[in-house]
Image (cartoon, rainbow, N blue to C red; front, side, top):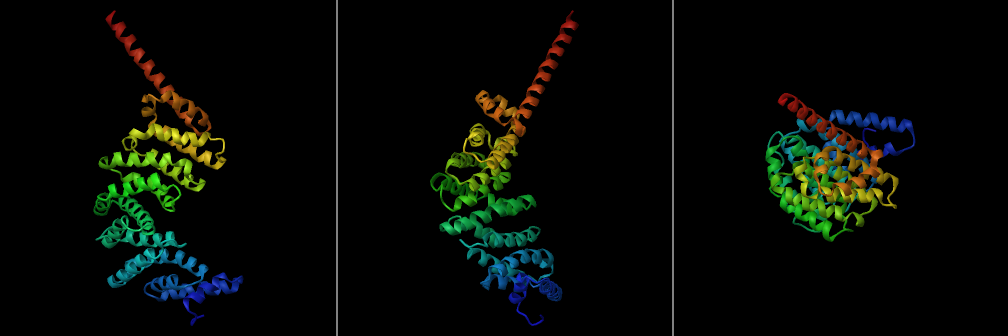
Amino acid sequence: MDSLPLETLLLQFQVADNEVISGAEVELERRTRETADGLLGELIEVFQLSQQYAVRAMCAILIPKRINNRWASLQPEERVEVREELLQLYINAAGESFGKEILRMIIAVFTFHLDDDGWPSLVDFAVASLQESVNLQALGMDLYGHLLEVADEHGNTKAVVELQNNMDTFLLLLHTIFSNEPTSPRIDVAVDLIGMICTSITPEHAAAFQETLQVANNSMHSLTEKQLEALLESNGIVFSQPYWKIESVFASTLSCICDVAVHPECSHALRNIAWSVVGIGVKHHIKAIARMESFPQLLDLLQSGVEYHCGEVLEQHNHSQGDEHNSNDEVNDDDEDEDE
């Protein structure tokens, strides 16, 4: 197998013969061990040029592993070359089946650079692409959301601030998509991004985020079941955030999700997700809910989800309110005893 091209070697893994597969595994491991970059450059080349779906799928699995294992040992010029190749692959991925996998490769590299100068050209591309054509916008939106999430998670203030400086443009784009393009392919990206960016929302952008969230949830009736599931899960992440991020739209958002949960045509799986999300909202913001003017109406809706802990949380709240009331009565009684 020494002389086999890498693509041909990877095809050996598709053969229904354990002996052939074992031989291919040994050879791939040997080549990985004996090359400085662990075959990273060659894997990227095969991924880029191969016409074999199975080969590209295997490369998509191996490349992030090689990045994680070998990136620190690469020379600066090798890193630059790989970054440029991955970014070009991503730009060319508009509408193709491996877009998510290429994004995963890019994020793996970006994560390695969070402790130094980052990857400025990548951040620039993500921001600039928000103003581009529809296909490139979808790629840019997805990239922007992932970069913001990873940078925030790792505490890279420089990258977070640079991305947040363009949050208004990003939220306006999401708002436009949910308002005017309910059947657009970009919706698939947009429904995930609501939950992805909510952890990075600042008070400055809270109003715009709340408006975008409201428009997104108002579009629920236009979404496919898969898109609706993603949007519900995004709402679950949003509901676990501080209340100020969703204050003005919390009641209407909760009502939208309850409406999905009680809809007679809602599938069992989707109903489970919807009530679970409502349960997250109730658990995290019960005090705020109890102060709402619409609390009686919401209470009626929430009673339908008792088996998903909504009723249990409400019962605990009522119990704590009762304890607080009793405690106040005891204090008043003690005061009266002292007066006597």
